[in-house]
Structures are given as C-alpha cells and as structure tokens.
Amino acid sequence: MKNRIYIIGMGPGKEEMMTVEALEALEASDVIIGYTVYIKLLGERFAEKEMMTTPMKQETKRCRLCFEEAAKGKQVALICSGDAGIYGLASLMYELNREYPDIELTVIPGITAACSGAAVLGAPLNHDFCVISLSDLLTPWEKIKKRLIAAAEGDFVIAIYNPSSHKRKDYLMRACDILLQVIEEERACGYVENIGREGTKAVTCTLKELRETEVNMFTTVFIGNSNSSIVNGKLLTKRGYQIERNTDICRNN
Amino acid sequence: MKNRIYIIGMGPGKEEMMTVEALEALEASDVIIGYTVYIKLLGERFAEKEMMTTPMKQETKRCRLCFEEAAKGKQVALICSGDAGIYGLASLMYELNREYPDIELTVIPGITAACSGAAVLGAPLNHDFCVISLSDLLTPWEKIKKRLIAAAEGDFVIAIYNPSSHKRKDYLMRACDILLQVIEEERACGYVENIGREGTKAVTCTLKELRETEVNMFTTVFIGNSNSSIVNGKLLTKRGYQIERNTDICRNN
Image (tube, rainbow over all chains, first blue to last red; front, side):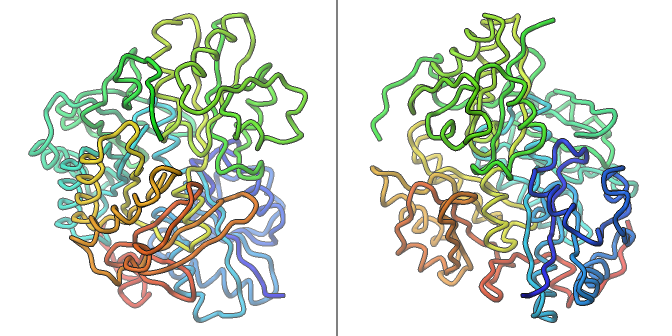
C-alpha cells in the first residue's frame, strides 16, 4: 500500500467549522504540517501530535517536507486555511507528486471564505459568482484588473480574497475604482473581518463607501450584483423566484 | 429570546463531509425541513427527529413552513445540499424573514460542489474562479451566455453547476459552443458525477471532448483556465510559484 498524504482544508479556523472527515484525517495522522498561524489555530485537541511549520512564502519547502516525512512511513496531514484547493497547496502538491510517485494524495475540502463570509453577511452569493484575489505577488496586476472588469461586465457577485496587506493598503481602493468603471456607486457591498475567529465583524455598505474603507488582511469583501440589496442589515442577492414577488411560479423542466 | 432557524449547508451528501457545527445544529433541532432527496441522505443518525419535506419547485412553501414551525416554538433546521448560500435557500429565507420579525436566522455554511468536486479531480480551481449555473429556470439564457463569455474572457477557471436535466440535455453542449468562441478546443476540463455519494466518477478531458459528452444532473463540470493541464490523470491549475519552475521565489510584500 502506498503512503498517503492528506491535504486538508481547515475552513476559517475554529474546529466546529471543520468537516468530520478533516478532523478524522488529522486524528489519523502522525505529523501535521502547515503555516505557523494555522497550526496554532488547531488548538488543544491535537496538541499530542508532531507539528512541523514553515514560514510564509516557503510553500514549496512546506510541500517537500510533507513528501519527505511521508517517505519515512509517517501518515502526514498538510493543513491549509479555507479550502486546500482554493489559493491553497493542493495543486502544488500534485505537481511535486511526480517526483514522489510512491506517495498518494487525498484532498479533503474545507469551507472557503466565500461561503463562510457570505453566511455571516446574509446571502450575498446565492447565484453565479466569482472569486478573485487582489494579491499581485504571483499574478500581474493587469490580469487582476482584467478579471475584475470581466466579473463586473458579467454581472457576477464577486468575493474578493486578500484585499489588503501591509504593503498593499490601497489595493481595495484600486479595485473599487476599476469596478466603478462598470458598476454604479450605490451597488450593495459588504465585508467580513476574522471569519470564524475571535472578533468577527460584518459590515454592509455601498461600493462608493467600500472604496473609502481600509480593510485588514483577514478580510473577505463581497461586491453585489445588479440583484443585490441590503435588507435589515443583511447583504442579499435575489434570484428569479424572489424577484417575482415570492410566489411559487410554474416552471416547466 | 427569539426563536431561531438554522439554515444548514449539508455538503455533497455524506455525513463525514458535513461540518461539526452543521451536525450540532441538526442535533439541537426539533424538526428538520428540506427537499425530499436531501432528507433521505441524512440517514440513521437523525431518524428520531421530526422530518418535513416539500417537493422540488416549492421553495417558497418550504421556507414558509420553516417560519410557521419556528413560530410554534420548535427549533427548526432547514437543510440545503452543498452550501445554503449558493443556489440554496438562505437568501429567500432572509427575504421572508421580514414577514416573521420575531424569528432569527443563522446560516451554517457547507462544502459546495466547486470545492468537493475539485478535490476529487485534483486541484482545478487553485486561483481565481467563477461558478455558473446552466439552469435557465430562473435566469434567462442570454444572461447565462453573457456570463460564460465574460468568464472565458477573464481567463477564470469555471465550475458549472446544473449542467443538465431531463429537459435540458443539450445545455452543456450549448455552453461549450459559447466557450469555444473564446477558448481553444484543447483546453483542459473535467467533470465529477455523484460527488460524496455512491458511485463517484471523475473524468478529465478537453473542451472539445466535453462538448460531445452527455452528463447527468448530478454532475459538476470544470473548465480550466490558460494555466490548467491534466497531470497524471488529475486536472490542475498552476499558480505563479509553480509556473516558475517550483522554486521559492523572492517576493517583496
């Protein structure tokens, strides 16, 4: 039997928001590997396990460490925040898997911030949506700009990840300026800080107000589409049966 | 204290893919309300609970039933497949909440098919992506078409929900024809049937091959972006640090 590495999406942070299979995979592992911040979020339950961390920006090193530990015969769990397949390490692990063909990978999905943030704000996604990261570490800003415009022109709800960092304080403002080329100032928006962690804070606002807001790096931002509105403090996007006066309409498929 | 309704995303179906808080909310509830198929997926653990179902296409009726039962003082759980905020009932519940101001709502996020399907296929999302439903029951086909083109032009990975039904057998073919106006025939794609249920099946293919494929209604389809490829049978989308020869690059933020 091949050695196996679990690549685990841990959701926003707290254990209650992890899936049962993610927790079972952690229980079944000898060593848990991850970015220092996420390892710390795991808490007491796994305190007995061997933990290995690598700092930020050393993703390839972290992934290689997983394969090296698995090659020793250990059951390895690699943890990522949110979902391991969305801005996580699942893809890189599969790439490197070619160098370690005796090791099998299993990805265990987790709750991504588009879902966990939406649940706090109300129901901003509801229908078709896009997820866009504003980090230009690995993506040219021109490509981010192109995607923001395409998303606005397609009338998608947009969930924005990585809207800010120490050195990118004005990126959300720049993104809003791009979106304002296509959509109106009064568009319903919102953002959530520290989802599923201490100090969760949800705010609804217009796109114009969002442009003037400085958010921190633990924030997920939501831009509504043309069917979005703020109702009793919740950011909602309506679908057909809601727009048509909440009556059950007759449908034919 | 106000009565509260839990609006629960149950993920793809099996209990292991539910979050701990979703299971706890079901345990804490007196009555579980949902579409018949999802109620059946819940299985033995909740067999003692009162269950109420409404057929498909009666979403408003199902939501009103939740409020009526909660008004009687019962703790109500409304279950949706995947995430309740994505093509689920969270938004409609908040709309109707205006008529039942004494009842509070809590949305508990779940694993949506974009995440659970991606985990089976490999790591097709990885970076920016769109989710688009091909159901034109409540969205005009012209709007779906516009979104497909915008997503292709923005070079997003696309997760397609509801690619087929009894009366919409050719919709995936029509969607592929639209995408082929913008992206090449050899684009890496894939699809997953019955995610997290009996008979899970994952297939990778080109966009041209996908066009010729008839999928069933329990399928989620993935269209890669320009950085996607099929590696050892897995559909992967690469990011910057992978494209740059897997070396940890020096970055400045």
